[in-house]
Length: 254
Ligand SMILES: [Zn+2]
Image 1 (cartoon, rainbow, N blue to C red):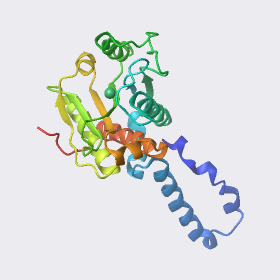
Image 2: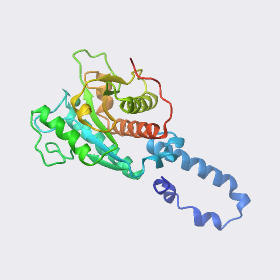
Image 3: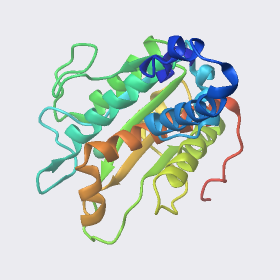
């Protein structure tokens, strides 16, 4: 993770060596604190976790932005799920690359999967293809990104789902959920089991991250903000670090 430290931006090394050390010790300390602060701001994750992001090196992580093409997913006002999740996936991809991981997006455009398949409304075939892209690449994690919308406005909060019966899927879901709850309050949701074709067919620990509810006006406003989508990507990134480091997470909902 050292190579992504924003130390170079400060450019103070030469300046400091020209002066007596004892005079500039307070300055050096301030600089060190500022650097750690800048680093933690850059990722919105604790410096402790950023320093531990080396666990992601060389990990092939499949990131699956849901929907696309003729299938917009959830939609409210000007917000469209397929566009929001692709944006978050690109942000997560960037963080993963910086950590030395090997992210693999199942789609990079609106209407085409990474295997060249044009997205249609035939969801069964398409969901299998998304899992297959991850399987063929021997990805170690499959992470599908979605957004929710309910008829009622009151529901809010990002939530992670895993395939019922998958021990590692559950652990991964709990780790990501813990970071979403911690970094993006208010959110009291817990990871939840379910039965999902795309998770069933993925051969590695797999989760669906529902980043929030377009049907809740406050959350829709947050999701419309690129800064918030960056923080969502950072929380998922932080969850992956938590998972690989084996840090304890609150248990999933039963
Ligand atoms: Zn969706």
